[in-house]
Image (tube, rainbow, N blue to C red; front, side, top):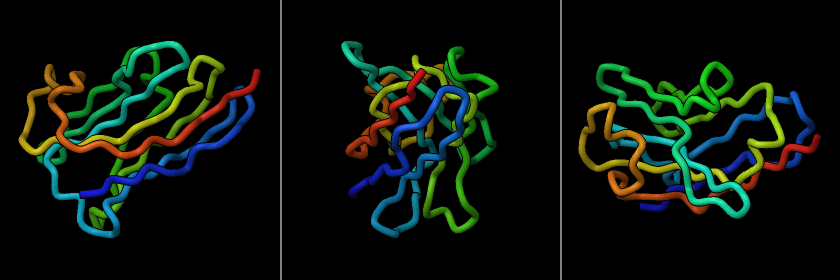
Length: 126
């Protein structure tokens, strides 16, 4: 397993950006996938996650209504569409996959995810 996150970059305040996560072209077979981020000087924090069977989705309050997690029909790429970016969104973003299905209250804990991408840096300039 080798999750690869990409799509980061330097954008201006208010811009949009889409992050992608793949597994070397293989199907993303895991029941739950999520995005986390680590802001400068902070611990890794939850951003968004989705259970594909049933469609339960959870977002951190700080990104709700601005970010959206999705997956392509081929199930090879998971996206994090980010809009109205703010300076506080500057972080390294990581995609993660859980081997087993989770209930929504478990989505936010890093320890429930077994595989992690290497991270992609998003910098939002004010």
